[in-house]
Length: 237
Length: 247
Ligand SMILES: Nc1ncnc2c1ncn2[C@@H]1O[C@H](COP(=O)(O)OP(=O)(O)OP(=O)(O)O)[C@@H](O)[C@H]1O
Ligand SMILES: [Mg+2]
Image (cartoon, rainbow over all chains, first blue to last red; front, side):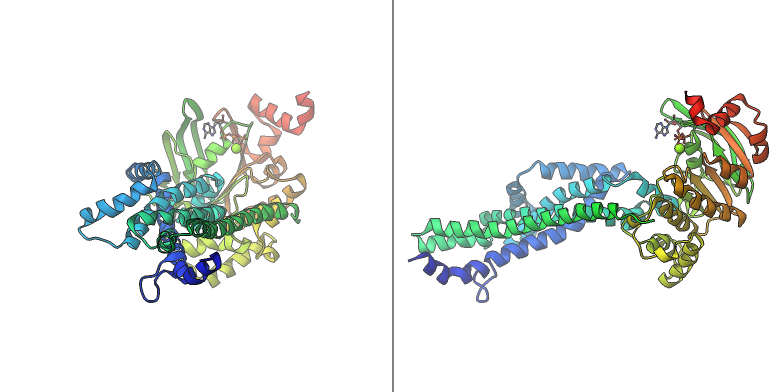
């Protein structure tokens, strides 16, 4: 079997798993999982970030503790918790996709909360004072003044977080989730004679997706700094 | 309208306000001046509770502003505050800066809020900049927008903390003119400023602060012609001829 034949016979399997005759898998599942995780982790990360900055101890302390625990834990551990511990706690067993999704959402939310916190703290104090002096309360100030600005500066970090998440989905392998790494190893077992090619293609696929997104993040960042310097010079009277 | 009774304020071990007693009547324009670090900003910021106080009382329209049952946000929305650094919201246009609070806090419809905001922007001479972003305005224009934004909540009282100190000299005038017109329309104003020309022409009374105390208070005319306290005399001499006193 040549590399061309390998690609020719397995590319559909690689991209979508057994779909439409079986469950969705492969690259499609990887991207869907990563997107869903980020979309769900985002609001949670904002809430965690705000909670960590909040003036109320009863809110700040538990969330801070949670964030520290999760950040000090390998994702693999979080996946094990979600896989073995969560069902015994809640009483019903979730499938691999949901398990992985829960683990990723918790893990990403903890990291995002730090990005949110930095974004909010980086904001000029005068912004909050202006808002409060108009009569906006704490939460409304966050909603209308702080977050819209903080999220904008966070955009490149968010894309980078998405890149990490894509790579993190590969850990779904260990609980038998048919994401792209799992599929690749299946192909490898079936073909048996071409491990180098199979894993090279897998590596390339990750690289292309992640590198493309990283460049996109870089471009976003550059555009932001450019816009600021551009408008600074064009002050009109 | 504003009454301060024995107000004391501490930053850690430093006493920033010492037994401040003052009464400001409705419609009055009061200028606060004094050397750097004398507590002018601290004083004006206690009036809308941006700074807490240690002891004493502040009453606005007879209401103790530190009362437990006071709705702080409601209370603040009736006091306009203009900052030295403008603090416009950079993610919003000029018009949106002026409509955000009326829409979200006064419950106006967008159309009504925009109509009102355009009247205010026209009043500060910036109706033609409604759709610009703050970063594309000069300092003087930004500060005028900040004044319009504060006015959009229809406050009966306006506080200004060195509104022209961050401006290039050629832009000071345009902001002071807007403030003068506001004063002529009967607005109650407390203004921290070193613009003595403005104080002389617009203020009803001038307070002189030093080391957390109000050392002198007098009608503007008398303040400039016959300052009583030696510190006031020195201060006025210094800002008249800043160079010679520095040498
Ligand atoms: N947040 C703070 N923490 C500690 N000390 C402070 C704080 N804010 C002000 N101070 C101190 O309180 C004193 C009064 O400060 P304030 O800002 O009211 O002076 P000011 O009269 O407005 O001066 P300036 O003309 O420089 O604005 C100063 O000595 C200052 O160092
Ligand atoms: Mg000051």
